[in-house]
Length: 148
Image (spheres, rainbow, N blue to C red):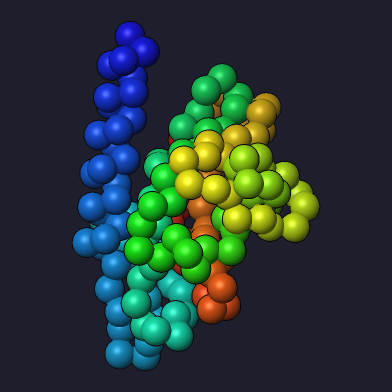
């Protein structure tokens, strides 16, 4: 069962990375809009006018815990400063150490292949989750805006 679960999560990761790469467009005003699940995502202003690419998995719920895998080995990983996760109605969590722990402290870049986790923050129902990357050039980019 666990091997099957890893295979499914791996497949989801690959499909979402392709979706992120394909679903990003740049407007003539220099803002980048990322699309997820066929609906408009967040709009960001990037000084380069290009979408950032990092390796991050779709948020998962295990019990009431939030788990997000961060691969990191992608084109824009060296420019990533930290990741913010917004849960529910405004609970904002940053990666607070290289291990990928999520908390309310200052943002710290997670190391490649870390697992971003926060225990007991999700409900038995659906929770609204946003995942945002902050970069050294001052830009921010939304990677996920979803319900889990």
